[in-house]
Image (cartoon, rainbow, N blue to C red):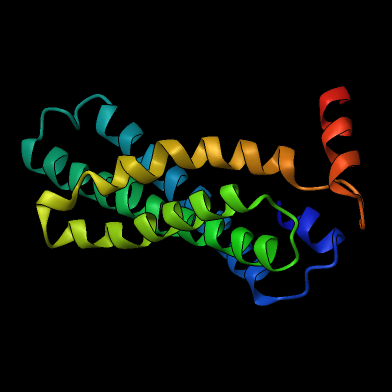
Length: 154
């Protein structure tokens, strides 16, 4: 997504913010998966205190540690997409909403009743990224009418 934004002429900080958010989200999911692997390793599961500590690490890194950077990724794509009219308005509004929810999910570390913000970011964000990937034009200056017909063909 960031490569496409750069190709389309976006030189604003939003693309760099999106790149940072994407790298952080991917890194945090990888760390979370590795910690889950450690939890499943023979002998570790017998140690209740160790499993509990690893569980909280997995939750922090894979939950909030994913949704906050994913919010950065989405907002970093939405702002230039809205400003340069690269994405439809409905998609940018939905993306900005998801991004704000993702950023607010850090509150769940202090207020447990805000835990619903994590899955509210996680699952719709993948759908948003798919839609945004299809809606971003593939060429500079591509008119909306041609963009729609090209998307239907390819």
